[in-house]
Length: 111
Image 1: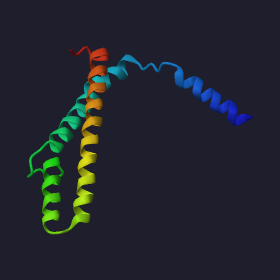
Image 2 (image 1 turned 120 degrees about the vertical axis):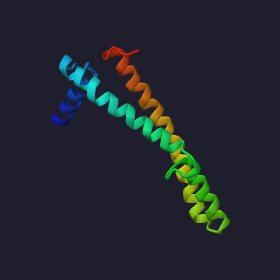
Image 3 (image 1 turned 45 degrees about the vertical axis):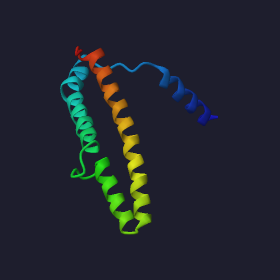
Image 4 (image 1 turned 90 degrees about the horizontal axis):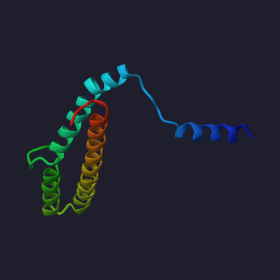
C-alpha cells in the first residue's frame, strides 16, 4: 500500500512544472550553455573529421577496410558496428544542440 502511495506521488510530482530562480537561469545561460554548445560542436567535428582524426567516421571506415584487406573480418565487423553507433551519436548530438538552442532562445535572450 505504501509503495502505491509513493508511486502515485512520484507521478503526480513529475507532471508539475519545474521553476528555477532567475539567478540560476543566468548562471546556466552564462556558464552551462556555452560549455554544452562547445562540447556538442567538438564531438560533431570529431565524428565528421577526416581519416586522420582519431575516432571519426572516415577513420573507422579506413580501419575497417584495412582489417578486411588483412583478412580480419571479425575486427571489420566490430568497426562497422562502431560506425553505425557514430551515426546514432550524430543524431543525439543534433537533438542536444536543438534543445540547448531552444533553451537559449527562451531563457537567455539569444536569437
